[in-house]
Amino acid sequence: MSAPQIADLVAQARDGDPRAVARLITLVESNDPALPDLAAALAPHTGAAQVIGLTGSPGVGKSTITSELVRALRGAGRRVGVLAVDPSSPFSGGAILGDRVRMQDHATDPGVYIRSMSSRGHLGGLAAATPQAVRVLDGAGCDVVLVETVGVGQAEVEVATLADTTLVLLAPGMGDAIQAVKAGILEIADIFVVNKADRDGADAAYRDIQGMIGLGERAPGQWRPPVIKAVAARAEGIEEIVAAIDKHRQWLRTHDQLQRRREQRAAAEIEAIVLEALRERIEALDNGASLSDQAAAVAAGQQDPYTAADHILSSI
Amino acid sequence: MSAPQIADLVAQARDGDPRAVARLITLVESNDPALPDLAAALAPHTGAAQVIGLTGSPGVGKSTITSELVRALRGAGRRVGVLAVDPSSPFSGGAILGDRVRMQDHATDPGVYIRSMSSRGHLGGLAAATPQAVRVLDGAGCDVVLVETVGVGQAEVEVATLADTTLVLLAPGMGDAIQAVKAGILEIADIFVVNKADRDGADAAYRDIQGMIGLGERAPGQWRPPVIKAVAARAEGIEEIVAAIDKHRQWLRTHDQLQRRREQRAAAEIEAIVLEALRERIEALDNGASLSDQAAAVAAGQQDPYTAADHILSSI
Image (cartoon, rainbow over all chains, first blue to last red; front, side, top):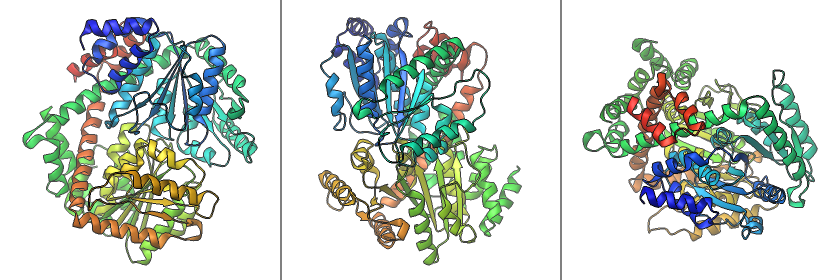
């Protein structure tokens, strides 16, 4: 796709055409050669959207909370984009997944854009693609972009670099509190939500996480993550979550943190693009310097992986 | 540490000195400059260990199953190494974590080496470090190396590239089955274990996962992942898991897959080393070409991230 065609699509997306938005995200997801043109076309129109990350283990009710947040934000007249990122899902292309039935409530609302994204097989790709997809939704005029990820671990940390505000969702009885500490989630969470708070163990989970937050050292003026109880399936606790997000945004603004987070996000984004470009160069090597030739030598014990890496580094 | 010192440590590790093994893994984990020397010293002694990956969501009982597998393998007279990989945990250094109490059963057994590993803050590092740590345990004479990871997503896929055989652990009532499909786990699992099979919903989870395996197309001779019910806390199902691992190993051997998997593992390992080296070069850039300068320009909307990436690519 040519640069003028990209510029047209961006203009249509800015006019609110959901198909143009969909096509632009597909370009991002498929790592289209036109991405640099797209990034250049979007750059002047980005930076206004509030980016909110949601993360938590499978089964904590991420989709339900996301859906209720969308409802609340729409009620306040805000345009909302939702990116549901599945780091290794084979599904993508905007499909509304089986367990996302609630999301269909918003499927006919022109003020909501919902999209699932996968890495389409190349893992490094998602780290580069997600921030570009956020830029598309930002450039298309979304006031808020919700980025939802599955899992505990690396994906969360990537959400945190991406978002202005990161919500970590827990549920009772899943051993989440200990896991949260292990996964370094205390450091990335701006807001904790204990969902399914009507179930046994909710108070214990609440106390556990409050206790762990209390243990952390915090300088004066530093943000202390609130812990909110919710029963998203009955829309309970959603107002409190929205209020906490607003309060965190105020804190970011008054403490010069919004700019800092956005520069960190840009740095991660640039680095991901650079590493992806280098990965492509590595894949394109041939003859004795190819990755598969070197790998065969290492697997056979004829060469160690560092010497093999040196060969490849000197070839790209 | 000099190359002769490394060679001494490797010799001590091969003699069964657990402190030497610990020091070598610490070198790996801290991305020590001596890693190329270590890799060269280990290369002639590696390739014999059977590498088994274990993965699953928080709360499915990974540690309990790992511990019972260690017991069974020790009963068969095999030397066992365990790497518990927490992609973003701040803890490391061989600490036995709070919920790993069962592992302490093996703490005094000289035929077992147990180690937790974290990324120590640099995320790309773990992808490079884990295979090196496996090499240390392999070179130190472990017959079997168990690699346990937390989370659903990218980490699993990395375990799968690393392991000869990958076990995916599920538990009833955690929405795991749907999540397993979403996370592409069907493609990476060689063996499924439904743990906590005495709980409500175990049969449903078992049927769900069997149904999904049945849906996949499979060429004649291709491996069909078995699904095993276990109650690891009562050591039930462990024999069946060990038998399935052995059967899968036989299948790998008779279908030329062991070699193929190990070459893939070597390729992933080499690529991770190359990308880590390039990442370090990026971090070391200064003046206007530095990542933080470029990131500030992108955050300010003065530059798009692809142009910024081009600047950095041309500087390294």
